[in-house]
Image (cartoon, rainbow, N blue to C red; front, side):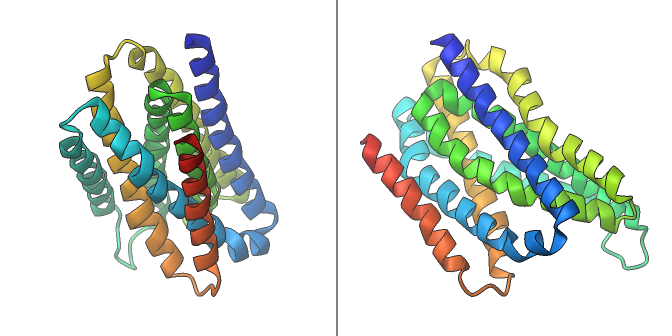
Amino acid sequence: MFLNTFWAVILASGSACLVTTIGIYVINKHEKWGSNNVAYFISFAAGVLISVSFMHIIPKSISMNQRAPVFLLAGFMGMDLINRFINTMVCHDRQCENLAIGVIPMIGIGLHSFLDGVIYSVTFNVSIFTGAITAIGMVLHEFPEGIVTFLLLQKAGFSSKRSALLAFLAAALSTPIGTLVSFPFIQSIETPSLGILLSISAGALMYVGATHLLPAVEREPKKYTIFSLLAGILVAVIIVLSKG
């Protein structure tokens, strides 16, 4: 069981790393195509993450620990506070150096990607099914994350080659590192404590889906992103109901 869970977590975090890398490659080599379609990937990922959180992860965490809703709120607000802290470090003045516009967000994305790796460890240790349906939405949102990281670094004045390398280190490689660092400790955690971690993860996923992915889609002038959002919801519903 330990080995099955370990390799499942490695597969999920490795897939996230790969998809992020593909996003970086696509925007570097095919900038027009990537820019034209990134909204659909974001929309689909938002539908999956939010639906999976409501329908499976939150109820599962509550069944493991009755205090889970408190930690769900903590996970959501914790991500908000981290995001606010990072944003206050970014210079918004038009006269500021472009370096701050690229490097600080890169650090924030790197931290977020590292935490994604931790979430994989938590959810797969609850069950393979919980980890798998969580991974669907999370892996899909890695593609636009790689694109965004690359573009921010390029805007900051880095060359395409250096932007691609830094984006890979921050947005892609940090996820499997987060998994490898956290996995040995997750194994020894008892069920009530694992329920707390799962609820915190759910809060973080809800935050990413509701406050980052959906608003990003709404800012895009794409007519049909609603269909990719509904497709993401439908996929999540089918997977969750088929398990039940």
